[in-house]
Length: 225
Image (cartoon, rainbow, N blue to C red; front, side):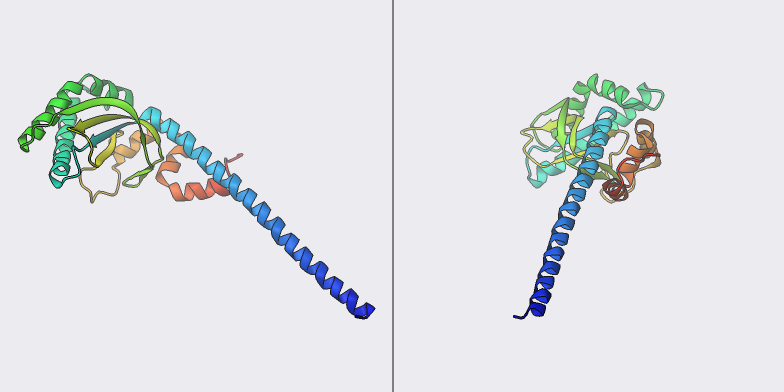
């Protein structure tokens, strides 16, 4: 190889090395940016979940088993309990209750809620009993109509039917996001108004426009304006 050819060869080697180095550097920088973006989104989601957990009360019904009969009883109990709560709370609480008032009412009426559940179970021809209590439980990500609730721990009214080993059903008692019609995909204005009262504008945006909000936070993070 003559000197001229050797220079050209070395030049190509340098170009390849520079190209590989550039690709590796870009990949490292991109990976770092992606990681920071994911961390921003997760941190904001976690903050929003903690705020929601303080301001909502969820409802959880656990079926006796996964048999078709026990699952049908679960739905009957759900409907009966929701109807009883709506009627009773309207007559006892004059103004629209907030999360604390809803929780306080539920805590003072656990026995009545068990009785409603037990009557419903008996009416369907079964003898197992129900247990009603308020407790903190982990819930996965859940979409209620067009409202997104991030995963985390929330307080909930739990009604366990019999062995409580079947699939469960849940909703949000306050604000009112309980759908008994599976075709319902849009939260009522009343339910959304309840969320607006307890969330910041940014938090409300997160739970009602989740995809766009995640993209914004991924790339830009918190606004500096």
